[in-house]
Length: 201
Image (cartoon, rainbow, N blue to C red; front, side, top):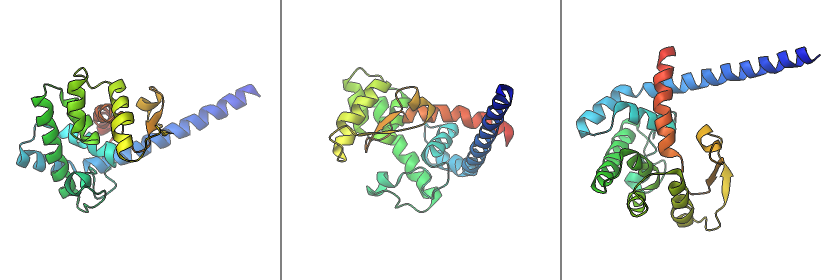
C-alpha cells in the first residue's frame, strides 16, 4: 500500500515538474522572440545594459505576453498599460534603465541597484546611497514598506503572499502597492534561467 502511495506521489510530482518545465520553456521562447528588437534598441541607444539583462527583465515583467513587454508605460506617461507596441515598450524601458544606470553610477552604486530602481523609481538610488550604499533585501523591504507602499495608499503595511522561490526563502510576502522587493534578484536569477532553457529551445 505504501509503495503504491509513494509511486503515485512520485508520478504526480513528475507530471507537475514536466508541466512547469513546459511552461517555462514556452515563456522563454516567447521572450527570445524579442531578441533582435532588444539588440537593435541597445545599439541605437548606446546602452550599457546587456542583451541578457533586458531579456531577463522582459521575462520578469511580462514573460513577453503583453504588448508593453517591459511594463514601461509608467516611465513614459505615469499610467500603466498605455504602451501598445512592444518595440516602443523596449525603447522606453531601456531609456529609463539607462537613466537608472547613470544615477547609480553618479552615486557610486552598483548596476543591480539601478535594476531595482527600475521597479521602485529613482528615489531608491538616493535611499540606498544614504543607507549604507548596498542594495540588500532588508533595505529593499524597508523602502517598500516606508516609502513605496504608503505613497500608493498602503499605510498599514498590508502584505500578500508571493510565491516566487526567492521571495519564499525570505518570508514569502510583498507589501500591497509596495513594488517588488526582490525585483533585481529575480532579474539576475532569470538571466541564468533563460541561458539554461536555451539549451532546450
